[in-house]
Image 1 (cartoon, rainbow, N blue to C red):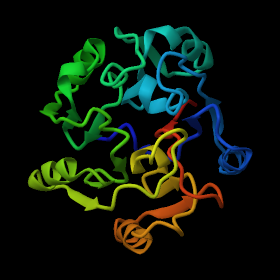
Image 2 (image 1 turned 180 degrees about the vertical axis):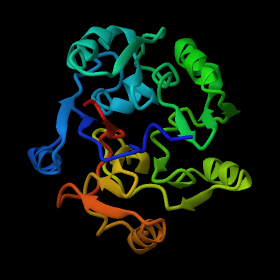
Image 3 (image 1 turned 30 degrees about the vertical axis):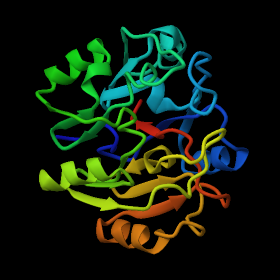
Length: 247
């Protein structure tokens, strides 16, 4: 099964945080991508209000579930494409865990989330994909997972790492922290990444100050991935970059 976070061919469109730097934006455009910027969700914490993975989840490469208060904006953004936008049920709120309904991790045939808080519309469409659900305590499961292959992820979450290794996946456990996130102590590796194709990983900034820089780069190289650094700034959690094939 193709993971919707990994384009089956080179993406032509990418959904990114509306407050990304001009350097990141310019580098995405240089990669031939149509850039769709998110708009702020004013009810969630300011640190994540622009993050794509907070307000939407791709079921397949042509189907997105979107938080209801922002549904019309994204419907308009994709109106001339073959991407289908479906309205979710839960309107997000500021307090955790009422901001995690769409932040769902995916790897192989598995859905990984704190299932008590998963949006029911999203859950319905995931069930239609015949996926197996795994309940974990980590609500920000997508933020916590850099999905870099059909069987490969990078995470700093020990429970996600153990769960996936037990299922036979290739998980690289890195040290928590060392990732910027506005108004928070630190961000998550999944929110710094995306995939432009099944051969190329996007990273929001440089890893030069991350203590696991060498093992991350080695892991990606062994996975057959080229790394595309989008800025010269420190790696920053901007929410998962969601790549699509709209044409």
